[in-house]
Image (tube, rainbow over all chains, first blue to last red):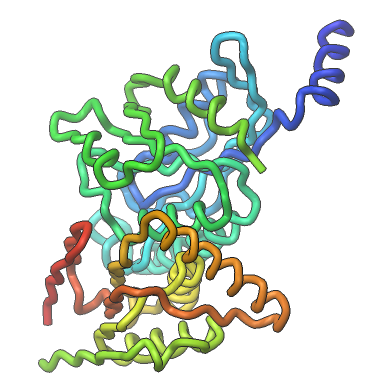
Length: 210
Length: 131
């Protein structure tokens, strides 16, 4: 125990910055919380938040701090930041079809707008970003383009996560075609597919954190 | 029902502080206009446009649809473009005001109530509206 503490002490002094804030960003319903939960479950045995098929389930930034991930002999301490989905429009009427009453739908929409604002503000505080995309859908959305443009302008390392590859209509290759300049990892957060490759990528790219 | 489209020259927005650009766009879009702008805002400005839109969402205004086509720059042009961003950031820092020039390209912004879908390709886009 003492020995391990000493190792960590010297690692922190001589090993550079090993703890990073990992922001999980993307449009709504791409599987951000499912991914945050999978990462947290793999390394801590606990989840981060509730995932749902109803848009804007995550309306506040959800955190899981001091998560140590490993890949081969390398390790990295991360703070997982599960962000509300970024959107250019939020209509309370969209929630009514999920059997949410009008008053609750309006409240959900109001919270969701605040969540988007909060997620955008957090761009100033993340070291590395997982930009999650639904591989069954067209990745060339303005939200994705604007998000990646912001990360580039801020020199924040980004890994594109092509999620939901377990679905038959998944076309993860179109994400690489749309954004060829970024590393892309194909995963299914729900089924836990290809997570090791994602951890490799996080450790490899997060080391460039500012 | 009528569909109103406003075509806006880059000169109308160039040199304006970011807040004024965003106010100009959102005030018109909230009134029901679809704006076609001769230029593209910086990614940070576009993100702040989304942020400000969220602050203005209400029962009658669910938000915007936006799509921009930016000229793809390579080689030295890309380097000059990044230098221009640095210049804008420097002057913004000096003057304490965000005043970036629009980039070469085209932007369409409209009310989400009217624009139902924008299908984007690398160098074109199509818009579906519902009145």
